[in-house]
Image 1 (spheres, helix red, strand yellow):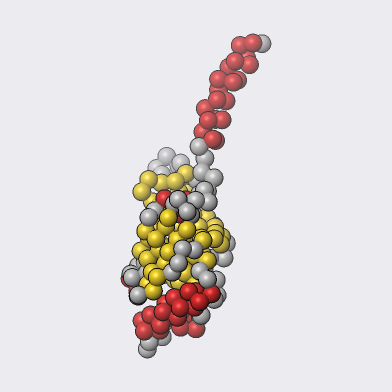
Image 2: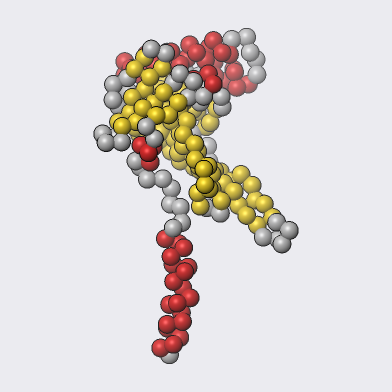
Length: 187
């Protein structure tokens, strides 16, 4: 009987240990692992500087620079990218996790940077009629945000598959990074 308990414990230990390393999402202070996050294409001059000691951020864009502000997590989600079956019939699941944050600027700073971002969007979409351009023109910019995009394989983070992006938060719950629109509330 004693051998059976030892054998059971011996066989279950690897299972228990592997469950301890399962990805449970990002810790709240994870964005502060970076010092600076720069925007893409249209918002290439949008920059968020992160201070890990005070847990504050500063936003700069086209001559505007904010005072230190807090970062608030808006939402997170995981999307299935694909399920791949190899020649032996073994399935592998690839997913992407998204974590969306808002920079909590004071009202005057938020209005100033939102106007600058909206002007940039209007310049870039003037005369264009595709759906994303129409969506961008028709939505009000309500602030600045950032998001983290993280690739997963079988529920665990993939090596070198974590990306930090800045963007404009729009009134219809989307974030625009200067290249792509992301719905922050999509399931």
